[in-house]
Image (cartoon, rainbow, N blue to C red):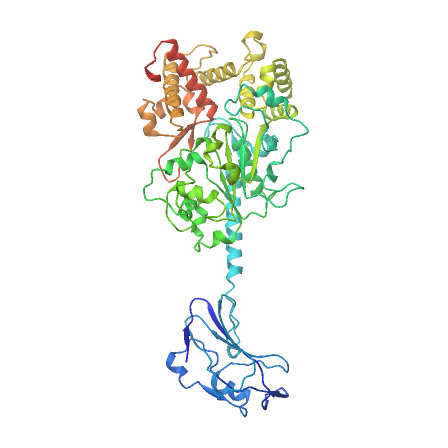
Length: 577
């Protein structure tokens, strides 16, 4: 007698015998049927092993199916005139099933015994009138839908407004009101120098041609008409300030507002600059733990298989800011969301399509020079896209949205068009923002033409001076457009040193201890200079201390260059050895 303990799932035994016409048996409600000689034990439901000893029933040619029912429970051999005899025995969770025994039988043909487990709904006996279903798939779908709704509400609240300037004190604007469509192409344009981002602005600005395959932001994962399937991994490159991060925010907002990509259940943003702060955690993370750090609503996920059963899009913004080694070759293989390992191992296994959550989609944004960080990216990445920035009509559209005074907007646009270099550089959205800020200074367009900024450096310099002016007006009632106080120069040089030394380390996020090393007092700088509050923004902490960064990477690069130029002017080379 063979026994099998039922596990978490239902266990089902099927016995098939080739029917032999032997004798007749009458069953209630049926006509005459032929029956085989069999010996079997029927269905069990959480019964003790000893209870089976007396359940063996010999069914010979004179036995009836009703007798089997009386002694063994709901075993119902299914017999047809032409098909095989088939008997099914089911053991519920915790139950024991006893395989049928065959003896003294005359069987023509073969005997097949199949054992299978499943999670199918189980019906209780009809005597109590209760029908119970595990409904595991329904429950999972409900949980995923609830998670999706929670995340959409959170992302909508987080990204529906954009802050240009200081996070807390800056003026926020509805993203949908200020967002201007960017020109995105598939692949990369040949002949563009990937190592220098400014010298080729002219060629980039003029090179939007009919040969480009343009892609809408919300369609970056969708295949083109001549392609067979959608993409799993997309790498989007673009120079600093071209709009990569804002594009990510708009993509998320459109999903949260249910305007696009509703085939995705969850969208999870993992900025590399935030991942950098987790490198030193010795204990490591499982993927589930890492996701809970970034998305608190995912703490409601009790079953790790939920991540396998839903459609997820991971967004890794700012590959160029990453300090992770991203060692695809040496990192060990990880395939379970509950397995603890280093953050670097989690990221590389997510990106590779045959490892961790292979059905999940991946979007990576990067500056051109950092593409090499994704090992063998031409193989790992299924689609490469490039953000080209604003077209000429989009430049004007942005200024009219940003500058609410239509007369001033017309004057700014006219002035920019008179300067070829300015007009070319304005295909970079962050430069448009800085230009709009500078040209909105009262009466600046009425000054002598030679004093109006016409280059990248002069525009950033005037932007910096504008922050000084705002500080002086707010705290001291002063109005000075050109000169800097000694105190201002000291804080700018401190910030410049911080910017320069950390650019060398590829460090773009700073803790309060990092600032203290450079003799920068957050509170003092915020009150006394204004530069710090305007040029720095406080990062959202991930259960850690406060973190700070410059409001844009180009601001950090400008201050680093300013610091270097001052030191070279003073012939102080000690910092560059």
